[in-house]
Image 1 (cartoon, one colour):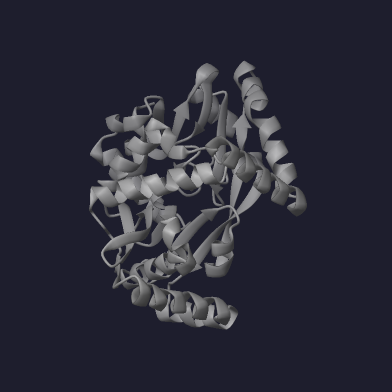
Image 2 (tube, one colour; image 1 turned 90 degrees about the vertical axis):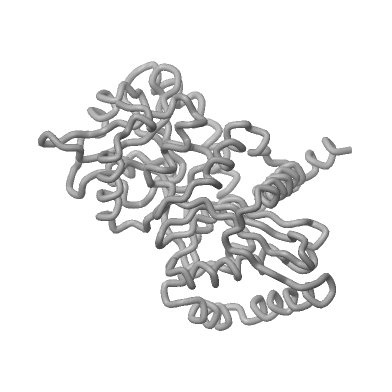
Length: 354
């Protein structure tokens, strides 16, 4: 059991080799660099190194809470979770938890190929993806066939933005720290406007994003994309990319330019730039949204739940998470109730601002 920063370069390289052997999309959230950065801002982060036959055969990054309650590394912000194991290695889940001194291991975006933990999932969700494996032109052609009105309208708004505001420019990998601060301000305002918890009000998340923005590794690179009009940022996105996957994470736009749908324009330009760099998939993340429905080409399953072993820690996990999870699931499964919940959150947010 090690702190992330205690992993040697040999172990990190072996982690990458194991990850490369997986048939799952190579999400940057599953790379040692992401775990390392989480460990810099979350002191309870740990990595269990699993040995078999005298050599490292797997890694389980996690965070350890009171009474051994474990959670996937970066739970609450990471969009892909699980262990990194040698193909064919199937340790007993409860024995693994015991060896890690964990009473539970909670996850909310477990990738589909995690055979060790999927049997313990309570819910299956969809994460929406854009497939640009065959290039942006092929994606745009498919989009035109599926929703020609949407594509035509979005491109027309992009042209109108250029005419009415000024020259439109897109930067796929912007390095200006001021642009990142602007994005976080927009996102915080969006959270408050919609009645959701402001993630950037949590210091560790702000620090995490700041560190990841400076991370440059082949399979985990912080990427800030910005859409400018007349030299002014109107939409931006911060995410992580590997050589083959762009994990879309924090998108936002300036509400002053909402009539031009700058967020949609931004995503189209991101897809175009990602395809040009050989990235084959944009992962839009879990959770339904109109823009995702318009842009997606398909979806992948992810899982929510927890593996537990008998004990007080497992009981505390159940009491702390299951009632809320079941209530959220009940609302999500009933569209009218979900719509009412969204309106209630927005109304409460307006009252707080007034």
